[in-house]
Image (cartoon, rainbow, N blue to C red; front, side, top):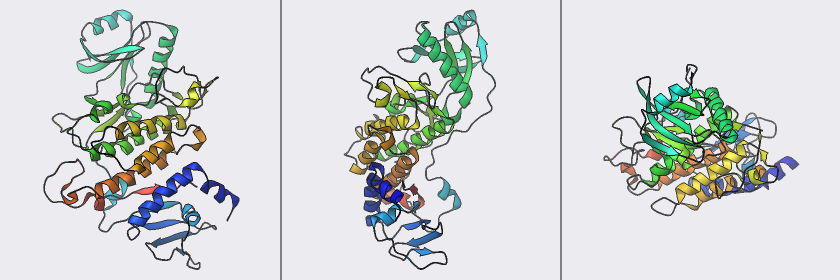
Length: 387
C-alpha cells in the first residue's frame, strides 16, 4: 500500500467518514454494492458479502478499513428503479440559469418615486432595508442603503456585480435595476419564507427539515461552481420559494440564496472583526484575514446543520452532528469537502426515513395519505469516500 493511502486514512476527514460508512454498511450490508478501482485502475464490483472482482483479475475481498478507503464510491442499488430515480432522489425543484436582460440604471429621482410606492418592509440589516415595491407592474424587492458610506457603496456594487454574474444560478434573485447614488438594488420578489422561519414551524416534520439540508447544500455547491464564495451563509439568507396555494409541508419548494453583500470571488483576502456571528469561518477573523474559499462556506454550512438539529422535535441521530463537526473543523484544510458532506447527509436522511415509525404510510413531503411504497426503496445515493 502506498504512503499516500496511509496518510489519507489517518486524516480527520477520512476517519470521520469511515465511522459513518462502516456503521451504515454493518446495518445494510446485504443491500450495498461496492464499486471502484484497484491499484492498476481496473474496475471492480461486488455485493454484500460477495467477492470483489477485478476485470480479468483474481477475485479480491475488502476485509479492512484501509481496503474500504480505497473504494471510489459506495452505491446503494434497489430493484425496479427507473433511470429518473437514479438521477434525482428528491422532488425539490432545482433552479436553472436564465438569460436575464441587462438591469436598468436608475437616477435618484426615479428611485425616490419608486420607493414612495413601497410600504411593506421585508427585512433589514446593518447596511440596508428591503421593501416590497411595484416595478414595471410586477412585485419586486428594493434593497436601499441606510446611508452612503464607502463601505456600503462598495458592498452594494459588489452585490450587483455578483448577481449580474450569477444570472439566477444557485437560486440567486434576478436583478432588475440599480441606483448608484443612493446605493440601491431592485430584485425580483420571491414569495415564501426563510429557512430560519421554516425550521421553527411545528407543522413541519423532522424528516422534512432534514431533507432540506442536502438540497440547500446543492445550491451552495452551484454557487461555488461559479467561483463565488457567499461568506454570510446562514438560515435567514436562504429563502424557500412557495408556489401559490402550495402546502408548506410539500418538498416542491425552490431553494433561493439571498444577500450577496459579502460575496466575493474565491481567493480574495477578507478580514472581519468579531461581532458574535458564529457562522463565519474563524480564519476570516485572524490578523491579516484569509482568502475567501469554499471551505469557509463549508464551515457556515456546518453551523446551519447544527442550527437545524437544535430545532428538531426529537434528538437527532449522532451521525448528523458528526457531519456538522466535520464541516466546522478550525483548520480549513481539515474540513469536509462540500460534495462529501452532501452525499453523507443524503444517505443519513434516507436511513432516517427508513427507520421512521409507520414507514409504509410516509410520503416524501412528510404527510400520511395511506399505504404506499417505502420511500427508502425509491431512493438511490452515491457516496464519495475521501481518499
